[in-house]
Image 1: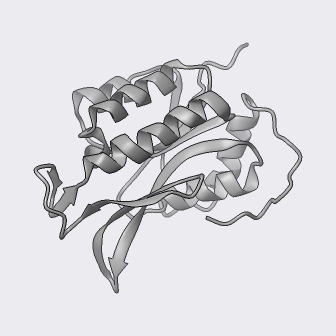
Image 2: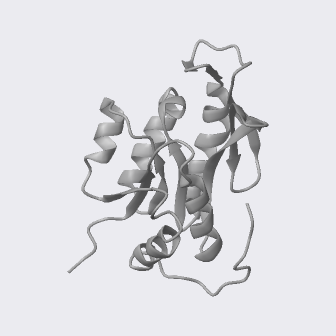
Image 3: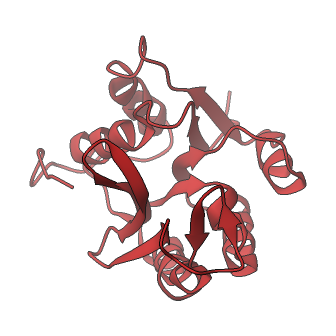
Length: 188
């Protein structure tokens, strides 16, 4: 029997630990990955925005409460140039050169960017596995992704998040050969 899926997308409530699970998988499963993840910008307990960080070290503010933009999600103004100029090239480079494409996350902010949506579909249709997170909301674009038969969508909860990295690594071992570890505890 052949493996039907090649893409793994995490979903769950904001702040549940999707990015933490992704980072644990990347740290423990030694492979060549490229793409990006997002991280909250906080001041104390208050979330002020979101930073985009590529796996090759680029960083930029994707959205912030003080950002003036015609693209908004809640109180956050979204900088589409960050998606077009940093995220999309990072994904394209990963699709061309890496074993795994990381997209954390496919959400309302990111989906304002047409180039991003096109690149996500190229990744899903391409030969490399995609690993990332997807917001749990209905839209034609999100539905087109979640209705595909080549993805595994995993709900992250407080009960399962500590066990998920090992389970996800086992899923990927079915489709990506593991390489000998050079740095098994790399940090993000």
